[in-house]
Image (cartoon, rainbow, N blue to C red):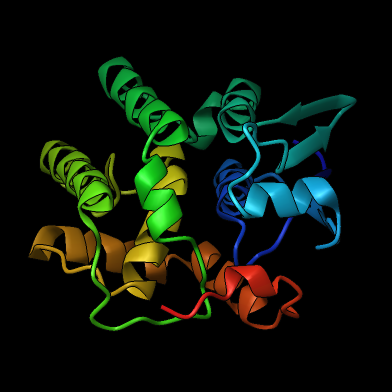
Length: 218
């Protein structure tokens, strides 16, 4: 695949931007990044969970414009199925698509109660009941995938779209000190040590903070 442009919003707060960027890394697609300004109304609405749709990230490649993280993942898979965005095995691929779709469509309580903030740390954070149900569902998904694949990623030895979709959740679990069983904690640590994830976090830590509304003191 040739070089492309990926429009993102905040690296520190932008969970969907992180997902799209990781998908491009998995696919081996070189992208030039365009960061939307924090005073852009659509950017602020999305980061503050006030937008009903996700128009960032947006990928422009070979005359194609595709937004929405799931659509980007499917586009990248179609362009190069051997890159591993989705598993090669059809049963695993169907499972991967299912849990990616579940993340894309659900977990609203987790998103609102534990917003992504890579710079923050809240030791001993109390997760309220609504968000706890989402946390429990996430760890169930992780346990099932890891048991079936053998890890260290959800579908085996290499990251797939599922790992890109759940990577921001791993970051949230670190930020809010969510306690996990050993298998899930090992998976969280694998994602946080993923070189692409470490690169994104380093850029997030260097990002100027222009969105004070998202720096909530708990």
